[in-house]
Image 1 (cartoon, rainbow, N blue to C red):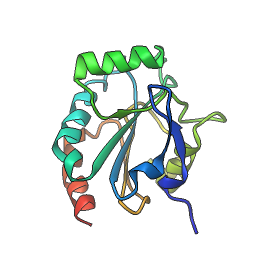
Image 2: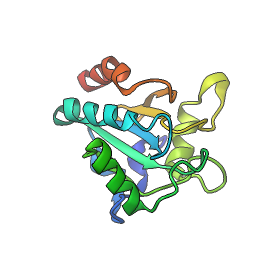
Image 3: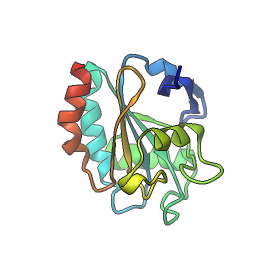
Image 4: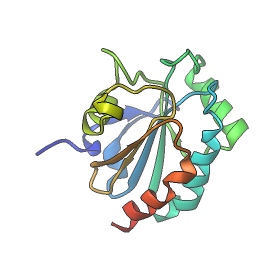
Length: 162
């Protein structure tokens, strides 16, 4: 049986470990975030998706990452405060991770293998790369940083209806 998102564990931004199996049956939008990036305002768009679809089964999971232009250098506590203060983030933020390279979180190794990017590239190219995962725990689609959260609405609705 091939792995699903539910086979992975991670750490929440508050330092508590969580098994992604806690989200079984939900549609997940998994995003590598950064606090000092040109795409940082997408945090507001991600929060809007969380507000719009959270009650119907969407869970947005933000994974801060400092691998692209060192655009998220703060501690987990700094990042949590920034996201809440500036964008009202109430969706689930996780502890800062690497998404590429030898120290890449196993979840991201799996996501990149399941949904390669442009021209089959497995690496994450920049902050705010997004993965939509269905209720079955399998990756539906990968989105580029330029894809605005609002533009994912129809795919999210389809995944929620599936």
